[in-house]
Image (cartoon, rainbow, N blue to C red; front, side, top):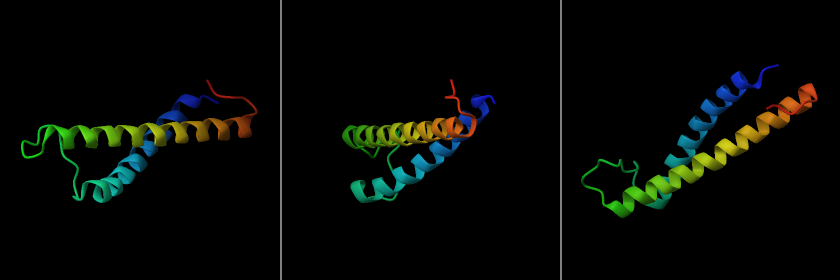
Length: 83
């Protein structure tokens, strides 16, 4: 079984999950419903860079957890570690 298609689907799912988590975290941490975009002239450098840092960290952790879980599941099903 080729793991590549499974990994792609898991990656998309991880992105969706990470986006939802980030929105919730930003509401609490940032005190606003929407995180700043890099081109939002009304938001300062600090807020824009903080949002990007938090978003990147959440995405990386969720992606790693989903990828690792997917690889572990494939190993359990096939007896072989993907990759």
